[in-house]
Image: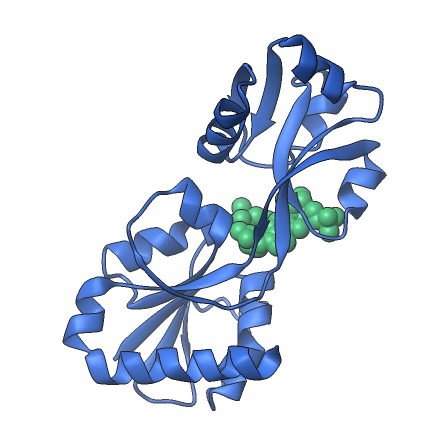
Length: 213
Ligand code: PRT
Ligand code: MG
């Protein structure tokens, strides 16, 4: 049996067409069913539904043989997982955003300490250290956009896709840190022990990604 870890929402939704192109149908809808283990049209392949940030943990410890996770999640959890394939899905960017009336350029130039709220403290620390900007990092688990509006922070580091969440909260993107897509990650032991079927699955994903480009 091969176990693929996915998360509800965009990762699952964007993975479906790739699975389909590889000839695989998921037989349950995670939005409708409460099942956490979903059967597929391939008797030897099942999908497990986990939190987006738990995908690397499942794959690292062998709870899943493969998984799909955003590059943001992977970089934040420094895992040393075999990261073979950029799936080109769940595309967004990691950016710095502030209130419209905050002069980020001036704050950076003056060398002031900036308070930054984010779920991505590791990435944020690296980014600002590389720029030589002094930051106080505040760890949050969600709704980062609220931090600059309430005075909790001067800036946030978060994912941006359409930009409409920032806009709706009168925030502006002041710096793009990196482009983000979801990656297929593989447990190294699974790759050894179940080499044939996993290799075939990776190849099928690869072909599906190439066809989607
Ligand atoms: O929800 P949960 O806490 O379980 O985890 P999660 O929020 O990490 O999961 P999910 O499903 O929201 O995101 C999974 C992956 O999708 C992330 O790890 C990213 O790699 C990728 N992705 C792509 C995004 C976005 N686009 C995105 N827009 N992740 C989050 N967002 C959020 C962003 O944080 C912000 O709140 O959407 C809002 C901005 O969207 P726009 O369109 O208004 O700019
Ligand atoms: Mg989310």
